[in-house]
Length: 248
Image (tube, rainbow, N blue to C red):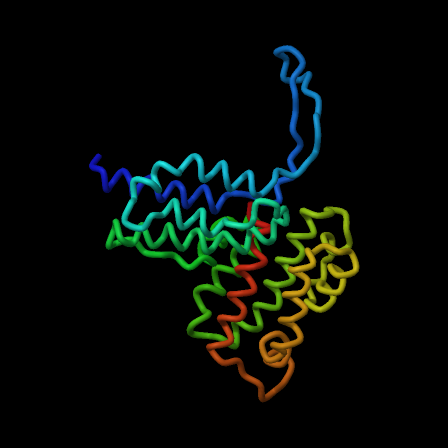
């Protein structure tokens, strides 16, 4: 394997691992008494610090970034992370992830002319576990450029399912997690009442609903309203901000 091929492989693996980091990881940590796995005791249930997760990822791949000296990739990634050491909010790191991925994609594009930079939404869709949501997202992606009005109608259900998936993680017994009616406004109200979404997520959803009524509501309920293709980007942007919290 030549140097370039090896570096391409390493950058692809680094990209995949960055996508797979769960910044909201709250899995318990265990200690074992003796050699018997059944004797484990839970030490603590404390979220892993997102900063530490990113630093561990960076330490693992730093030599690969260093070998790709045309972009000073390790330096620019560290520059992107500057000032975040004391930040613990997973949502901030979810927002930061796309800019880190962009630098890796640029490097891969320089090394491999056949490399296709996938839209971030495409990566996220592959990681969605709920069958119905995954299928609707695939159809959304396939139709968003050709059928914006049908996409806008379907987006209402997608938004409800995304919120419900988040509720299943936050509180599986909550009304939001167990609702059988996917009416979007009722789902949003339920999530707000039960504080399912983070403050930033709730703000994004509320802002979308209030400022994009043509997408969210009118195209479905008003006889003369249609959605412009350019509005699809607004839906994609919201999904890119909400999906990371339900896919890892």
